[in-house]
Image 1 (tube, rainbow, N blue to C red):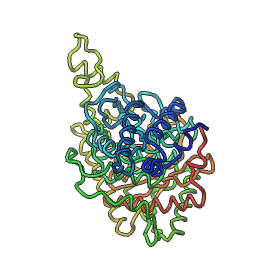
Image 2 (cartoon, rainbow, N blue to C red; image 1 turned 90 degrees about the vertical axis):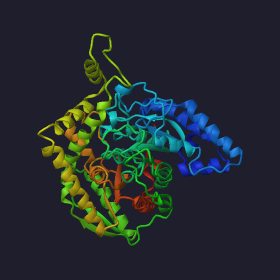
Image 3 (cartoon, one colour; image 1 turned 45 degrees about the vertical axis):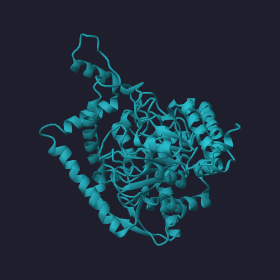
Image 4 (cartoon, rainbow, N blue to C red; image 1 turned 135 degrees about the horizontal axis):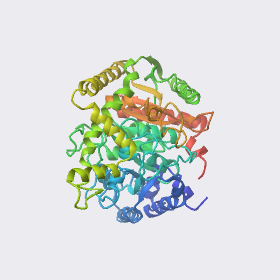
Length: 500
């Protein structure tokens, strides 16, 4: 153990309290995490870019504020790992793709701005599946990230860099994005907490688009309270984002501090189990449902038949939107340019650049989406998928008439070996079976740890789903479940995670 080991194991809330009281300086905290990155990230590969000087400058500014007697915010001085899909002025944003290798944005995303305004210290940018397309972070153009529980296993995707940074104690907070489960699935397989807020609750301005009607940024942390504190910092209306909701941020921190399920109705969907689900995952989920019952919740069985169609609908809607969004990467305006030697036309330069710059999964989805949107197929494919989306939304609305929240396993299995599903897209897509319906409907969801699977000793995630704009229910239920789990079995990440 090194000198910084006690600092890096603090929660974000504890870290902020220590900085505010003067027990620690923001610079000490930042240096401890930078030392940890230096120590383990060559093995984990959570980061694509570490902004050492920028992070220390932010930390010094926090310490100067405290020295002047200024009031510090709830997360002032706390380090954070930022998914490399958010633009950051002056440091690279690659979206895990060769097509943006070395691109330095001239502006900050709204999420980046809000983090800086809250004096959160941004350590650097994390690895991800290229353009957020994947469930394992193996589609990154810069190589895969390892799961700190077992470096031969995937850390989830597309936000595996952010989840791995948390699980390896390189940062106490991280930001992810969730299009079909890319915050919750990595949280589940790394034993961390990840939240997909209501669609439109966190600004998408400056977040490189994959599928505009599904993408949503959100908080990642090691505890429910830490996630709530971060949620409050990044959420809120943004006039720069036309899909941003002009509504107050739900009282998520208050809910996390007062967790309770007493008298709540909790739904269990029969479609979220069965064939393809690992026995240990179902065992831990059933134990979690029993805990909810012990805590005073009423368990209600739900039937949502349209959920069986969610995966098919998602893999028409998301590629269709991605084929439109990624048309802007033409080799002419920014990023990579190949073939501009005077012998090729503009169209040829675009074609050569895309061939060199996009990886196989991105090309696969662009082709799928372009086909689904083409003349003669639009109604049969994209139009039908949108109808299924409406049915899924109605199933949720009907369910939320009889329950306050819905729970399920976050993923059907624990982390699988790197490379195991690389040549089988369908097997890879099945990792998002439980998470996709929430993105299609636009409501909010959380994944938190519910123990380790007995057969492999790897983390299992419990998913909690709440109606749109009722994100506080996630934290109320999540905090209660987390406290009960810690009392019964201890915190899997803080007490059982193997040291790297």
